[in-house]
Image 1 (tube, rainbow, N blue to C red):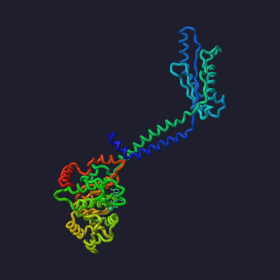
Image 2 (tube, rainbow, N blue to C red):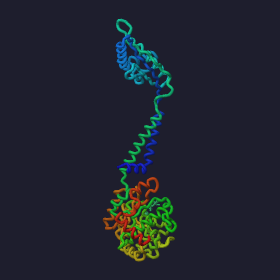
Image 3 (cartoon, helix red, strand yellow):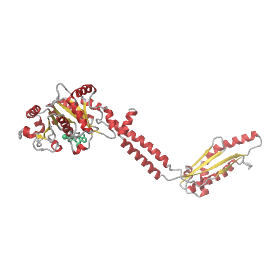
Image 4 (cartoon, protein in one colour):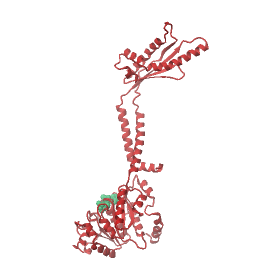
Length: 469
Ligand SMILES: Nc1ncnc2c1ncn2[C@@H]1O[C@H](COP(=O)(O)OP(=O)(O)OP(=O)(O)O)[C@@H](O)[C@H]1O
Ligand SMILES: [Mg+2]
């Protein structure tokens, strides 16, 4: 995955990244609010050595002080001085507890020691820092006094006493939130990449072509309007989805120029991938180009064309096949010029048997005679064998794949079902391609002109030019 892929993943999964970052920042805020504030008071100690008058003695004295300083810092963080401070202030804590809040540091090459004391109370922090320093002055004198009782060479002076600190040093809200943002972003991007890697849905033109073994001949965008009105009014509509169907029509017309497919089954691997909506609009797009088209609802188990097109559903495919009605009286004219529909009819107990019957083959042959195109909507391939049976009796199949929904193994299985019955896959069609946010991701993956394989592009474009389509 290069930087470009990473940018695409972040753009597509920006919600994941934002949510995780937000949760992380909220976590940082909660931690900040729950952290007990600690105040820090500090003193500075000066270590002096009684110097002689000569330059050499001065130098020696100074070195002695510097050597002392390191030992003193250790002593300042030792249990003895901590206990003395506790005793002096009458604190209710152990020496070990107090030690965790004391830090003494020596400035390199100087005779200065910084003592920092943290405490929940600013006043107590100051008192401890001062008491500790005072006690240390006494302690250093005791340690440095020779047994003879002579004046010690080295002494410690509290050069700077502690004041009450203004604000707490812990927690640090700004730093915590910055860490929260950084961790959230890293985690969010990590999760986004992981989800992308684990995503086994079909999202690229290459994958779709590879699995179906056919070219992608249509890329239908997601259009919320289709949920209310499945049929597009091609006469007046020039929206993106209408153009996508016109493009699909053009590609379909030039798929096999010598022997163009006319009985076309539209199917997919799983339910709700847009088979019926695509069937309706492929049929309407062909009708718009002044072809005489019949659209058949071959989904006898969950028929939907009569609902989408507001037609009578009780008389149709199944009733013709069972002999209960004639084909002519079952065909319904629609409000769309050039489009005739044969709905599914009443739901029969044995759809697969009916669809595989000789009567079904005869009926398709008859419709082929009457119409320029026979478009057959069907049921999902992985659910029942109906679509494969219809496909075997057609000129070819359009395999629908819903962007980011159809799983690769499902699609492969479905295509296998078609191969088993010897059906020919004319092309693959992506449906419900996202149009906002991740559009660039999807389209750039398929390429701008995503409707044809390179080998098909030139011939189709040339043909389109000559026909004026
Ligand atoms: N291009 C599209 N843009 C937006 N919504 C769509 C599009 N195509 C289909 N839909 C919606 O998706 C849902 C399923 O569509 P449709 O009924 O066409 O799928 P199907 O594959 O025929 O389903 P089933 O397997 O149940 O027959 C419907 O609500 C439909 O309105
Ligand atoms: Mg359907």
